[in-house]
Each structure stands twice: as structure tokens, then as C-alpha cells.
Length: 190
Image (cartoon, rainbow, N blue to C red; front, side, top):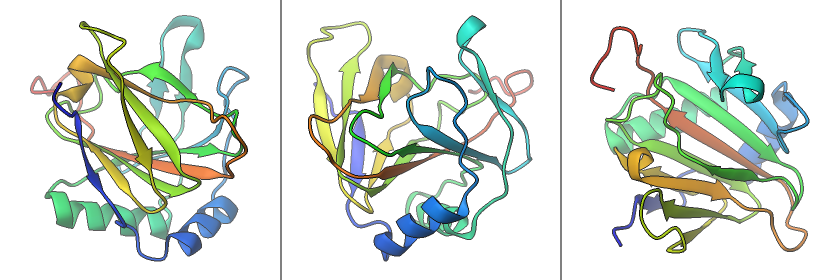
């Protein structure tokens, strides 16, 4: 099985400071009882984002760009040559906070560019499984404090991923997921 990601250790300088500042300086929201974590969303053009469909749909309004989000985005642009204009942050405060199996396949997000998740705080695992093949074939990656998981272009078409609940107390973790926005009504390259 081909590994659906690249991994960058120690992407973030002084990750302890970055974690504390983001925890204390962002206006975190808890959108609904079905979302077992707090969230924060930023879009370069200030556009809202709707995640999910039907009764599970949730809308997010773009919040101010925090200097640490901008700094990490600039580091990623320098390393990967991609300008990311959407960032979604998830805050996991306990071992119970998690993210279920899904693909980041919204039509507003570019499939031709990588999706990068930067981790700050407690080490947690991200799991990947193929969508159409043996779903028991799970790849697990431990996300270290200050690291980045680069999900390669096209991965969302063939893999799902999740952040499972942890089996013991582990502390707080923030993930910053950087994406490239496309207008699905005018940009057919996805």
C-alpha cells in the first residue's frame, strides 16, 4: 500500500509558545453536540464554509487571521510552494475528543493541492484507510508536537482519515489544517 502522506518533524519553531497562545488568544467555538471538539476557521477572502450535508450540516464564519496561523502558513508555503488560503483548527481538550472517518472532499477545496495538518500539543495518531479496497488495511501515524502531516494531492479521493479517541489521558492538542480554496462553480480543475 502506498503511503498517502509525507511527514515533516519539527516544522514549528517554539511549539510550546504557539500552543499556549492559540489556546488563549482564539475565540474557539463549539458548533454542535455532535462535534466532540472546539473549532476555529479562517478564509483569506472571508467566505463562510459549510461542512456536512442535511441535518449534519454546520456553517462556519471566517474569523480573524491570527499571526501564528499566518506564520505557520508562510513556513508551509516556503517548504511546499503552495499558498494556502483556508485554515481549519480543531482543539482536542481530552482523550475523548476525536474526529471520525472522513475525506476532505468538499467541492470548495482543491484536490490538486496537498492538505496539511500541523499538530501542536499532545501526541495523537491519525489513521488512514482506503475507501474502496480493504478497509482493514489501516496506516497509523503518530503526530508529534510541532509536526506536519502532508496529505498528498488526490489522497482524499482514495483514502479516509480520522483522529481516534485516545486510550488514556493525553492533554490538549490543536490541529491546524491548511487547504487551498477553489470556487466549484467556476474552477473545474478541483
